[in-house]
Length: 108
Image (cartoon, rainbow, N blue to C red):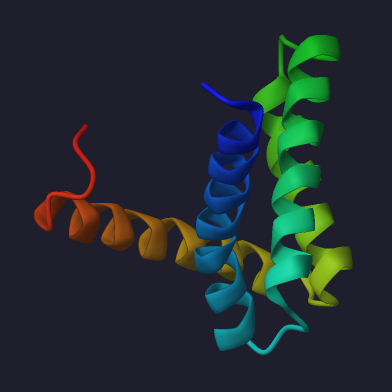
């Protein structure tokens, strides 16, 4: 596969993954843009990888706190809104995945 195609697919996946986060933050009154959501998803992924590498025993708890902290600072929201953003993001992601599966675009 050509390198440009791999990069294009990676960018498309980043944008699609950022849409539920952007909508969740915007719905709950946070300061969001697609670019900020993409950067935030990258930071969350990086934090997850680092936490899993350095704190594997109780990494899930540290990861949850890290995600909420990243959301809090990136979108200028409080702790409760950060939790609500995360929950709403999961709901929107599941609905989007189900819609894509129903339309035959995605097969799991």
